[in-house]
Image (tube, rainbow, N blue to C red; front, side):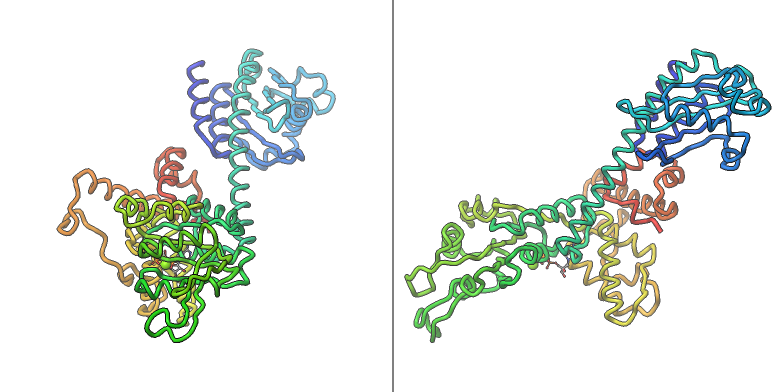
Length: 499
Ligand SMILES: Nc1ncnc2c1ncn2[C@@H]1O[C@H](COP(=O)(O)OP(=O)(O)OP(=O)(O)O)[C@@H](O)[C@H]1O
Ligand SMILES: [Mg+2]
């Protein structure tokens, strides 16, 4: 019995979903007590039923007049919090008074309160109609011990659920308030980034955005600008890699007449013209060293001078910079000034590559599909399951921009109503049987295949189960906790599969 108690207790504590906790608790109480039927009810703070689980008790039976005795007992336990253990309901004078004796016959009942910090938030009800006196007094006491375990597990699961809802609500609020609708992403790293963007947007702090090509660096820079009070001033993106040194200097800081051949009149640079706004220095890693010094100065003091002049000017411009290579690395190679790096990365945002964002791949694919199919008069176009699978297993070296291009090209060229995997202009998935191009160790290659398989399997399974975790776990014959961990590992959100 003690072994059983521990086993069931352990299983119950391993669950994080309220329904699963109640299911394990229900089966456990029936197993431990020898009851014929049972029910666990959790109440909300107004005393209304919030969750319930029953065994061998149908809805009709619960509503039936014969169940009246049980309802009386449940209500008593709910309001008084005292456990009830009746070997024979006929023995209870109070019940005998309130109900006809016929209905009481042969009924053995255990009813226990679920309590947390003195508050009753549920009850466990067990009965047996066939064996009179089946519940000994020790069983009642023992079951109350077990009920305290249920209370702990259920309360913890309820709190987690509450926390999850709270996070979802916060996320929604964040998007609504800061107009982040344009930025798609539910991956925890993206949510954390949006939160940081919301916190720092309206400050003057310099922000350094790092991330592979196409991960959305410019999009984040725009979000920083348009969610600040600078939004009515210019947002000026400058690509530091696209211009030769002297031109870049004159673009940024301006020049005076005669400063160089062709400088026929005075010219204000962006640090002047963008006054009050934001300058986005894209590919800042490519900024030539003499300009790095000038940039450092403007960041430190707000002062600069036009090319060909010594007159100091002052500006109030926020700088957001982006790089797709490690600036720290460039510092060690003496190609980037260390002080400038520290000035730039007052706030650091590192965008994860698309392949590490799990289900966000599908969210973004749907977003672009909607956008381009509407634009090209093909509204209603859908992705086939294979196409989704192909997208999930591709590693997107060009990140979101590449996904956007893939979807756009597929939308333009397709003639059907569903996009098939073959219509996506992507290189075929790497195969382990012909690994001529990229040879990797057995261990790495195997891991890749396993991950691809797991990802496909889990998404298929969730799709079949329409996002229901318990059902998906059943289909996969996995323990729900293991399934939950796997989904978390791959960033797959079951909610995305709910109809
Ligand atoms: N989270 C996202 N949600 C919606 N669209 C996105 C997202 N991230 C990127 N995009 C889109 O992908 C494209 C590339 O984004 P962006 O230009 O911001 O990336 P980048 O990191 O600056 O790229 P590069 O390094 O090539 O300059 C843009 O069209 C952008 O709108
Ligand atoms: Mg860019």
